[in-house]
Length: 368
Ligand code: COD
Ligand code: ZN
Image (tube, rainbow, N blue to C red):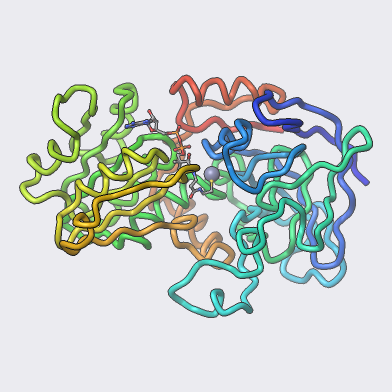
């Protein structure tokens, strides 16, 4: 058993508390990882507020981490102690019908299929003050050591800087893949991206890489516009600067609406606005944000031919694609470092969340 620091969410609505926790050794088929760096994603804030379904407290959040294998359980063959790895919040067992389908990046043997924030054997490797602490998406990267199933671990290049590629665990992969894999943005096309956080800005990067000729970035915080332009946005608009709905503004700007629109905020009204902003017949709208409520739409929006899609971690088969994404990063095919605005010691995790809530950060990296 290892004793180390972790940020525990004891109850919804409370700040995280940095505690000493016990981390049990990996069981058969599991890997214990020393987390070196972890990003703060808006979804972690959703958990703290208690607004994500199926999350039981107390829990150790965090799902955008990178680290080094500390020890392995019986039967583990794909990684060994000392390997650099990224824990995956979407695993890839390689055997289920989804994993075998080249079109799919889902895995049936995941916590999404059977909502529970314990490991697959329905137990936890974490305890604190005599209490069992829940895992989050199996990965719980706000802990200096974490235990995950082998099929939720991707081995990456030994040259990868962990304080940078940790973003591939969620934000960067989700946004970049939403454009490249889910929407399959074509060269010369027009795009609109709603929400310019770490995820939305990664969508902008994906649209740019795919060769979009026009990328309209939408946010109510104009402080996000400079970064969006740097990453490839051609137009930046604030819905609050217009009297008419933003979908009408975008439709006028482009003639028939954009070819591809993306929602990376997680609000019902912006999901509908994003849908209505794409071409009524051939437009594709990708929903990236999660919503904790229901949404009602005018079916005519779809009847005219639009496609409305969702994306899970940007459509990547995480375990096989992660090493390739890291290699592309090392070859400088994209610069995800531009998303990192702050780096803080792990003890300042709550300050990191304050920066996110205040709209002052894109990504804060916490270092152990
Ligand atoms: N109109 C325009 N922009 C808005 C509005 C609005 N009404 N409200 C907020 N915004 C902007 C904010 O100013 C901010 O710039 C941006 O939207 C949101 O950015 P962040 O930094 O707060 O959030 P991200 O980028 O870290 O995450 C956003 C998600 C929506 C992706 C996230 O919250 C989420 O729902 N994640 C779950 C979806 C998913 O696929 N997750 C994968 C595992 S987490
Ligand atoms: Zn996330």
